Length: 508
Image 1: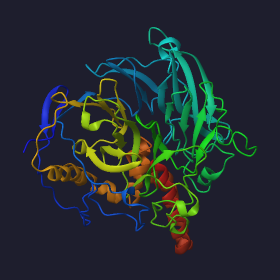
Image 2: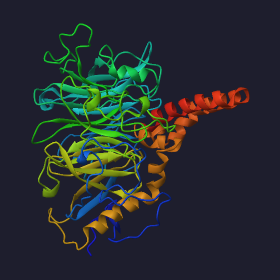
Image 3: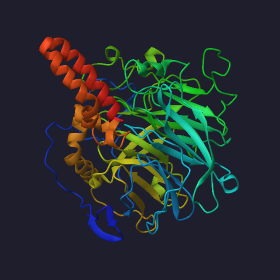
Image 4: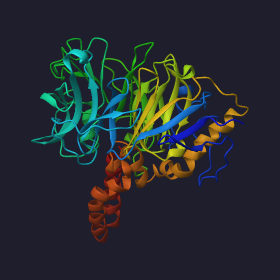
C-alpha cells in the first residue's frame, strides 16, 4: 500500500506515514462509528440531526508534501498572503508583525509601529487582514488585546505599511469591543473583509461567570460577531441598527469564543468556528440577528463535569440556532479557511481548521450547509495548529503555537494515488493523533484538558490548562484547601467553580 504523505523538514525527507500502523489501545474504549473520531463522547447529549457531529471519516487521495519552512517563531496567531512568496504573520505574545518567505524560510525584522498590547493569558497581537485595496492604500488591519481603564478588551487597529516594509505609519484604533473586563481570557479576535469591503470581527465573552452571560446582552460587544466599516463605524444595514437598546455594530450574538471565520467560496455564506467548554466546539453559519445560544445552551459541559444550565443542549427548541456541526470530545478548533483553489481538486471548497488540543489540521467536506466528511491531517507532528491559510496558488499553510510554519502541497501535481485500504489509513492518522493526544482529548474531561480547548486560545494558557489552573487555580486551590479546613463541602463547590473558570479560560 502506498503511503499518503511524504514528510519533509528543512528540505530534507525525514519520514513517511506508513499505512496500517498499529498503536496501543487507549485507556478508554473507542467508538467505531465510521467517523474520524476514535475517542468516546464526553457528554450524553443527542444530536439534533444526523450530520451534526461525528461525520464519516474521509482521506485525501492526493500524495502530499509537508515541509516546515520556518521555526523558532513565537505563537503564530494570524497569517495572510502578502505576495507570491511571502506571508505576513502576527506573533501573539511578542506583539511582532513579520514577513516570512514560504519558499526559503527567511524572516524579516519585526515591522515597527504595531499597537501596544496586553499579552497576559490569551491576549496579545491576534489576527490581521489586508485592506481589499492594499496595493493602493497599503492598509493593514490587526486585532489585539488592549489595556483600558476597566481592564482589557478586543480592539481593532489599522496602519499604513511603509514602502520599504519596515514600519506601520498613522496607526489608529478604529474599534473597541466594550465593555472592558479585568480578565485575560476569551478575546475572539478573528477578522475578515466581505465583498462590499466591510469588516467582520469576532469577540469572546471573556470566559468568567457571570461576565460570560453578557454574550446574550445586546448592550455589550462580548460574545458577538461585529460588522463595521473600514473606518470602524457600524454598517447601516446591521440587524439592530434601529434598536435603541442595542449596540449598532452587533451582527450576531450568543457566542463563546470565536476562533475562525471565513466565507464559503461558492455560497458566500459566512462560517465561524468557536470553542465550547468541555466538548461542544461549534461550527456555525452566521446570519444577521441570530442568537447562537451561549451560555444558555451548549453541547458541552463545565470542566468540573457539571452541566451548563441544567444540561440544555437543544438549541432550536429554546429559540436559538443549532450549530451545523459540533465536536465531542473537543477538537479545540482555531483559525480556519476554505480551500478556494483547484491545485488539489479533491480539496476544492473544503474547510480547513487548525486544531489545538488533539494536535491536527481538520479538513471538513461540506455539501450545501451539511458536513459530509472529516479528516485529521498532520496528526503525527504533535503540534498545536493555531491558524491555517490557503494561498492563491493552492498551498495550505499551517502555523503553530510552537512557532513553526508548515507548507503543504501536492507531491505530483495534484494526482491521486491508489490505495487499497483507505479506512485503514484514516484510522492510522487518527490513531497517531490518539497516542499522544488521548490524554489531550480525555484530559479535556480534566483540568489539564481544559487546557486543551481553551488553551487553544492561548500560548501559555493554550499550552496547558494546567497552566490556567496554575495561575488562577493555584490561588483558588490554596484558598480551597484552607477553606477545606473550615468546610469541605463549601470547599468542593468553590473549587469546582474555580477550576471550571480556570479551565475554560485557559483552554482557549
